[in-house]
Length: 553
Ligand code: HAS
Ligand code: CU1
Image (cartoon, rainbow, N blue to C red; front, side):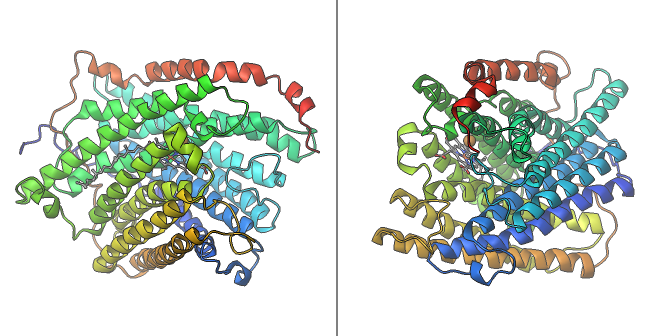
């Protein structure tokens, strides 16, 4: 297992202009995160009935803070990071730059969209949470802003697809390089997935908020939301998978064992888009048969992540064994734990193992009846997006920012401490939420002002507050390290991305080259979407009929 047949792609450096636009996406995302985590501290402390929102300037209520927290962290940060990071991995993977005008357009669209949404939230005109279910209504700038955030991803996708087309012309008969394939597949998945949200916002919520529609159909809009709201979690996760598959093996001194298996995992994410109904197990108006089908499909969406767990663990094992680790588990201790970028991401993987199990619990219909709308769900998604994804972003930042700035990481040992602190903090925090959730502790509820409570919520509430405070402290350390690296890191020469090699070259004959034909997978995905969602939408369109029954003035 020691020789890799595919060596690293030959050197290719992106022009500075392109690096700059990519860099500003990432920096913008982290700036937004900084605001988001300040709001998060208030939410965590509220579970111990400690009111800190009252001391915040501008922000007036728990719900306003929670909306800012969710929109900034889960929608804006993730989009900014994906737009930047995936543009980088696509360009580096293909060995050609993307259209810079398109990348600039995407950045500005994202920026303006975020400002519009932020205005509505900070002006207290959009305390509708990040799922913005009607009949809760927000100011029109909120909806327009979020629509622009989505448009920025489409522009990024167009830049990728244009580059892929150019690459194909110059490389007939060749396989699409793996790093680029993963990156483009991520956005192709999202292009299909984002349509639900776009229709919800542009066709219904925006006109409604402008007074052009008398009302909206909450059932239809929730369904459109979750059509996107499920696969959006993979839009957050897959850029991290690009790192786990494409970069971490190299950083850990290993190689990736199978090119084909990796491509198949990404393709499965494109195919298994229509499972959003598992967020609506408790909704009326969705048939039992549909709920059953979706429960089964949700178990299927487990597979690409199980494949990932296996592949990435194996790559780490190769790395650990090359570094002298022996026996069943010895390799695990020999992966480069002193490298904060690797340590943060391996810790993120461990969090995801746990988060994946809690996802399985949510997906189990009868279990979900117990925990839906409780703090258990917040526990689940802080293990997944709040740790697997966020801690991976931090780990990636620990090489990416030195790469952008041509500087060494400032105090790597502090960065290592930060990563471990964040991991431990999330474990305490999410355990508190999950334990409370199993006792019925509600999510999205201002516990400071609640006039009820159970004794069984007390200890979980304290764990949540403690864990959340430690998460906040760790996040502040992260920002300190980022800023200090930018202003005071030791100067170095330009480096390349930590690009991985695979054990075998991707075959250019046989059936495997067909994996690269993304249009096949898009077609099958669209057919599946129609099969699952078609009957529901047929029943609920034309919307005017639904509106007549359900007018919310
Ligand atoms: Fe989820 C609700 C089911 C994954 C995020 N999820 C949410 C919400 C969010 C969210 C934000 O079925 C709340 C939405 C709201 O506000 O209401 N989720 C799942 C399932 C998965 C899953 C089956 N979720 C995610 C990911 C997220 C995320 C990823 C964000 C990034 N989720 C649900 C359901 C609900 C839900 C229901 C609705 C519940 C309700 O009642 O409202 C699966 O995709 C998970 C698969 C994961 C695995 C783990 C693989 C592990 C890997 C790491 C390998 C480790 C290594 C380390 C290599 C199978 C890849 C080596 C280490 C050693 C120890 C050696
Ligand atoms: Cu989901």
